[in-house]
Image 1 (cartoon, rainbow, N blue to C red):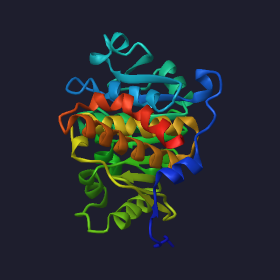
Image 2 (spheres, rainbow, N blue to C red):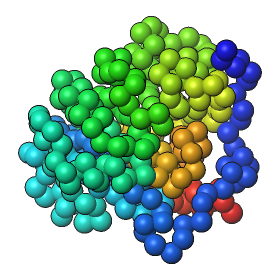
Image 3 (tube, one colour):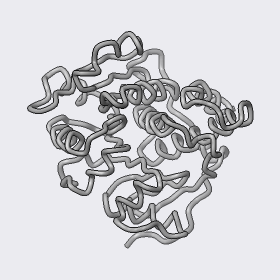
Length: 280
């Protein structure tokens, strides 16, 4: 039976108590992320997510994108490896190997078509993915996908509209209960606006960020941050908690300095600064 106890407050003190793994002395020891997504309409989303993963401490990042946006991504993001995501058919050996060796895979950011997203998510089941983070368009098709074909270690990053879609009803005034219900239904760790819930009912709640976070690309950075923490090996619940907290506080820092007119990309260096602040 799912737990109904109050959510534990997610604070700097708790995150400091949890800590983060020793980064070691190699990029390989800090974890690898693969971001699967992108479209002609939103080619920059994977760039924001990939950089966010590196900014929170991941050591390596790869982008798996449709062929029509692959040219030039390597120049736009020289720190990333780039793979072609075929529009149909099997994934090639290079991409399958990269997905299987990644410590965490982010799927959905930047996709713009439900059918394309659904097809790609089903084909992803051919890869031996360890931890999978679902975001954006992936959440719109998740109900159509057999849970058994997805990895046991699953994280859902949902905004309120996507949470309502997953529940197939309007949200209530009790966000913690709603997020717990999603976590139980999809057997996943769920993050939604500062609330993190595990499938067994455990939950944490932090203050959500200010209105400045309501800008294009902000959600891509949040998803990338969660995936980056997952790649570090902190566990799914703590990855979602760290990612949500750091993203919100990065927004607070930018809003204090610039008001609400900042761009999503302005959040990226703040992610690292917030982590330093929490750990010190």
